[in-house]
Amino acid sequence: MDTKITIAIADDELLFRQGLISILSKESNLDILFDAEDGNDLMTQLRAAEQLPEIVITDLKMPGLNGVETTKLIRKEFPDIKIIALTSYFSKPFIINMISIGAVAYLAKNSTPKLMLTTIKEVAEKGFYYDEQVMKFIHEGLLNSNEQLKKSNFDTTYFTKREKEVLGLICEQFTTNEIAEKLFISPRTVDGHRNNLLLKTESKNLAGLVVYAIQNKLVNLEEKF
Image (cartoon, rainbow, N blue to C red):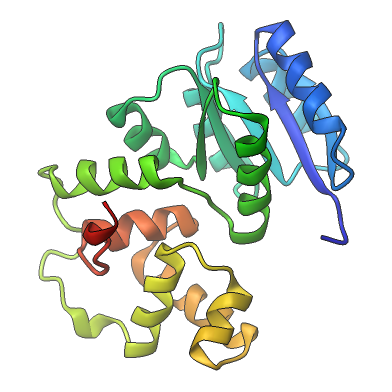
């Protein structure tokens, strides 16, 4: 990428936070704007920042304002910031909850540096990144839940054939350019379909769009799991 991906980090464990900064600082395409010791510190720095980060990597278990509440605040005050949730608790209910409130990626604290770098890159390029395990959790969690569908009389004609094709490829985590190549249309046209999908589903971001698609059984990802 030509431009650097800007990042802010929040974690109350100083050693872990400094280790994370050390790893990410070695990457020429990443720029760490600031780091914070907890959610309150992060929100204070975001509100005062001359330049907002593109991505926030936040621990979920922090004293004071924890990562869950911080994520809700960021989604409300800075909706363009993408949030990567970082935690030791890699459980299905926790992941489903974090995604439902706006996290666009989820990383276990014992992840490899390589996976973290991949996640950051994918989030910067596509707006979200769920690895196979997280997608499995989303799939099981939503299809096994008793949640009501957003449209009580769900009608598949609500979306055009092309919108459904674009939606399926978004769920398979292809980039805009990759989708354009596969469907023989321009990236700008893909963006138009994606924006229509966001409006029609009332999703805040692509992560929400994936959840909506699975919840309403618009895509069939079962063979992957």
